[in-house]
Image 1 (cartoon, rainbow, N blue to C red):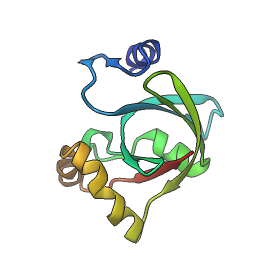
Image 2 (spheres, rainbow, N blue to C red; image 1 turned 30 degrees about the vertical axis):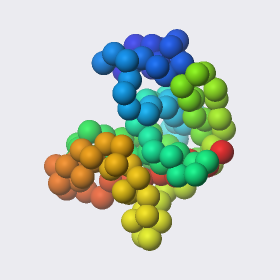
Image 3 (cartoon, rainbow, N blue to C red; image 1 turned 30 degrees about the horizontal axis):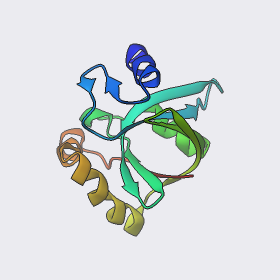
Image 4 (cartoon, one colour; image 1 turned 90 degrees about the horizontal axis):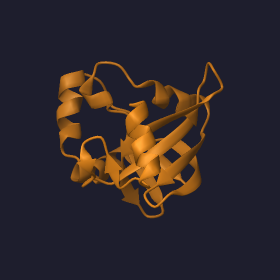
Length: 131
């Protein structure tokens, strides 16, 4: 993971450890809820107008990833986009009708998210990141 973050930063998000990225990927930097330190994670995203939609799928594991709890604790974050542009964002945990509206946006980009719901047995958190 650290090498992947370094590689994506170094190439402006164009390359990750799997090679040249065919999926839209951003680097999300949150503030650690316990440490207060910056925490960066690469994520697949979908566009929703000017906003970005990301899922806390954790590859279908049975627990939520730590970065999603960081966003719940502090809604301020930074998104690094391909090309090296950093964008401060406000985050919103999508729930109810809003979650139902944005879920198809992310599954269109990565259909396996539906499989992750079944595999994990949990409601996968979905966040809208607004500049």
